[in-house]
Length: 78
Image 1 (cartoon, rainbow, N blue to C red):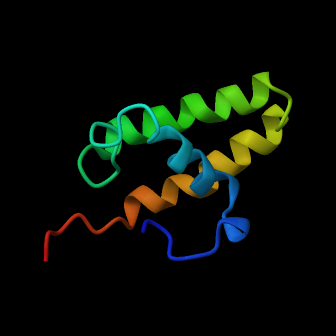
Image 2 (tube, helix red, strand yellow):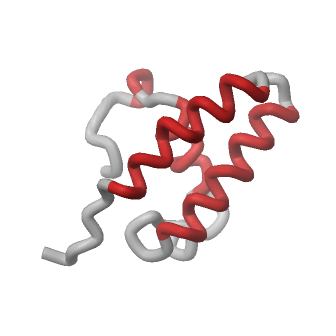
């Protein structure tokens, strides 16, 4: 729905966004609350660092790269 691609093709940012939706999908939806969604994605990246899945440098680069998603997001209902 969000990215129109196979799960194996997701980048870290896209995966973090999907992971952020598991607790409260409507509240953390990038379509409804882009600022809150972005903050929650940042929390997911911090958890990826804490759990040893990403190092800090890689996580920061991936988060920065993914933040462009919010700039290009079309929130129009049409």
